[in-house]
Length: 183
Image 1: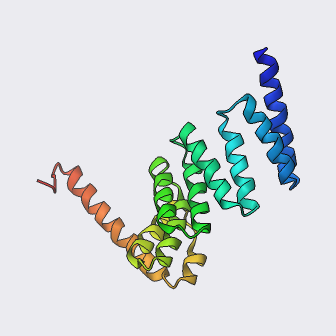
Image 2: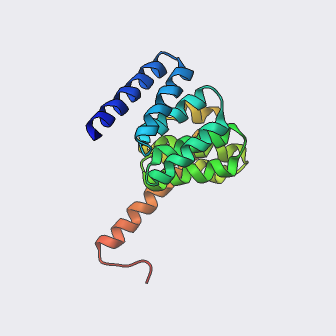
Image 3: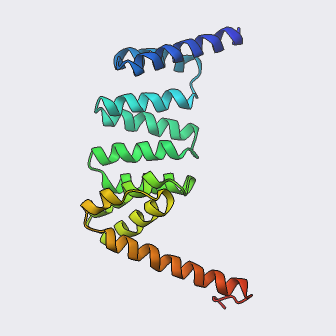
């Protein structure tokens, strides 16, 4: 019986994915919800439902879906990032920032989350944090300069990267000599 349910779940998930890729969102939602009745802890289904609700601009529904998914997989940075995007769309900047930070805490090399944080900090008029976030995005990805130019912060981001690089190198130098700079 379990094998039949597993196959049915996969079939409905597959149908849902196919409908989603065709842009048939309401049909995809029906298939995904049916698949969830068989495997209620399937993160991929929740994630895809959230994506659909974001595309339909039904952000409150997407928020609800992502929150449920996080209760099942609280270490998943993509869920926090997606939740942050939804909060950003409904003008809840503080919640958005918190979720982008959680995404980064679970995946420190999440350049896109750092960049999203930078944009939010610009919106919140926190230039210092924006520069720091943009610098982290650039250090990780090597990109984003063309977009950072739109905010007029390229030089400041480059200076921040250079300054933190010098600090890191200085710390490593004292560490390698057996000196603890904090003593």
